[in-house]
Length: 577
Image 1 (tube, helix red, strand yellow):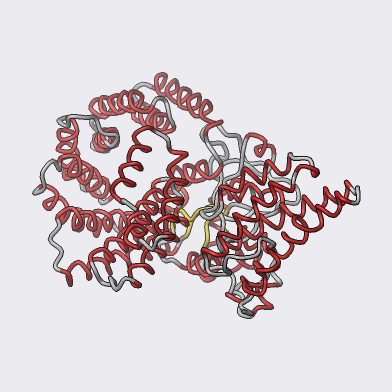
Image 2 (cartoon, rainbow, N blue to C red):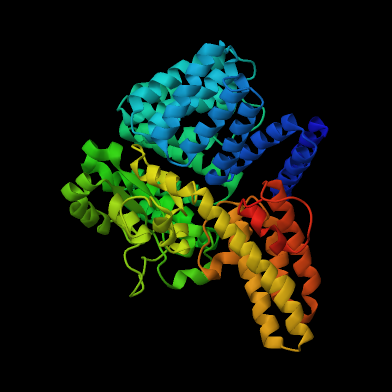
């Protein structure tokens, strides 16, 4: 494989805006590189893929891809190499973006030790490490440490050619931390320089609006209302020109309304009305997970201001029951158990001490947000958002507060509940306690259970689709044929989930979930087509699907090429031959 040509083709897809083709292209070329033993090509594409997943907020997939890349680096004898260190840097960045701050900081620090050992002089890499560490410390609430790393990163970036954009972004982040530390003159100086640098760039930057808005906030805190208004109006114009009237625009209208509340109450009220109208117009484009994250970002200050002593132990996100936790919500989902809300997870001691009071504070948050009405819970849905102890939250899904230990423990938990316990997103988890349990569950079943589940699903695919359906047609039993066809769809979807080490969700989401998985996502369309195909015409499509699953079994080392009848591969999957 010519990896440079492949990467050029990938760049072309991005330039054309063909984003729906990017992931299939990379997965296909990774498979091609693996088939010819081009491990270097595989490694290059895995790094591209993990970056793509991170940029599209698919953090689980990014981390899974990164783990595969690390394994390949170790196999190639490149552990503790620069390539290994930069892959770790990508992993830490994904942890940070996924809200798992302490885990990210630990990996960033490991990267720093590797850079020191390797004598890394690459200014871009070192500045990238410091900038990411700063953002992680910001997320952890330690703005003094964030300032420390940003002040280390900025001089390094200044020494690089064409670095004005990177310097301006770092200055904006530095100002945000100085603002939180009450260092208003220093924040203003950083933002004014960032504003000048952004203004001097040959092409406008999407980060410029954030710097201008932060200048508005500094001026407002300094009592310079006229300047604050001017900066917020500039920010609004920049956002509208670049992105249109999006949620950021609505938030900026709210900020400007706050500035004008005392001096121009009528204009302030009109701005709030406009902000509400913009948010309402965006409703069809805003999915439940994004709504939860925005609500958290808007309400975190009000909710957690009285809990500073335990702030470093508070985890927040949205995980559990509901289509929005799987990313499957649509307009029809909004008639029940939908609306602004998020989960807060506390350890048992903190929950015993402040849990009830924090829940009362949560209940006092504005129930309406971004044009969405208050959340309406259905009678039997139970508590899906609000304040939980970590142990009670997991006990609801696992039947116990601890992780399953034996095969019997694992098998007594309904698999859709394991899917619910591991779906969604964690927005913040500075201490990592909630995420430690989550990551242990995401590691999937023990190998023996995984193999049995895969063997069972593959055997039932063969039994229902390759054997029962044709025989039912021969016997003129249309009902039996239809049931066999449906069972084949179910078992194929199950097998695909096992091959991806993902728990199967409830039936209503089972096939849809296939389309979100890294391996065999391309079978979502054939499975959907099969559901629409009369049983009498289904056999060729079933054989195509079986062939694709067999190739995946072979690629993962569960079997070898041979019999097209899937049942012939069951013993190999079980490790019996």
